[in-house]
Image (cartoon, rainbow, N blue to C red):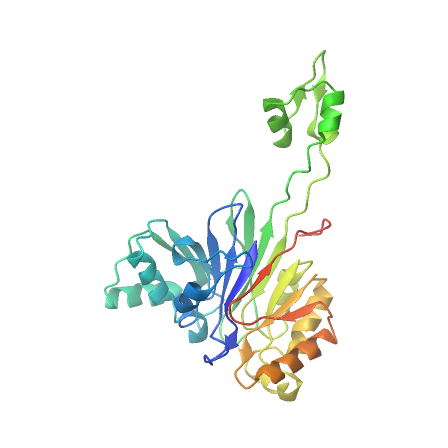
Length: 320
């Protein structure tokens, strides 16, 4: 799992920061990527972006798109991206999640522009907080935030990985290498030569906890943000304003960098990434935002366009 920041600005694009979009790559577990928000020109950033290992994130790999809310700096790039995906010959389906209104926006835009998609498009409008996606590897939960219009945050939970198979114990028990090893790894007991059963708990190390990623849309500090961020390995939080404009943050439904840091600290997150930076902050201004956040929560970094962040393995179990 790796985050690739395609746009880290707020409201309007600048030469340094495009508007909001974040890709989440899922390889090597599966050859696909997910997208959180899709501001204007996201598809241009996709053409430029690479992961820390040098791999390129391609539109054809996008299978799920999670929109936090319907402000233009978070979704105006989506119709173009969906159309370009067709021009590239994509046939794999795409599912778009977002607040009520996203279906009408996409269907109208694609119809009026006569954009023909070469793949199935599913649109899921979220009306209630809770689990919105679950498969054999990941679960995604959504909750409502506090913005000037309905805004969502998302929590991606990776399932725990089975522990390492202890081949020394297997040899001592007389279990030969082969299919029985695979059965134990999948959690099934196997017969022991000479009688009895060998159970996975006898020959497997403790499971490796899955990682937790939280990506929040635009928000004031609120209960939904705290719930989604609880125990997260990585929390991606907007930091539209600094202390110099702290009065504007609640008025416009946003957070300061210090607000984001307090959410991360109080939720017990392991790392905080600041994004959605107002255009009023240049490089030095963004550094001040980072310093304000680190004064509250030291494990904070500032995102910038085309930067990638591998999500480290979680070292210990946590509540989900």
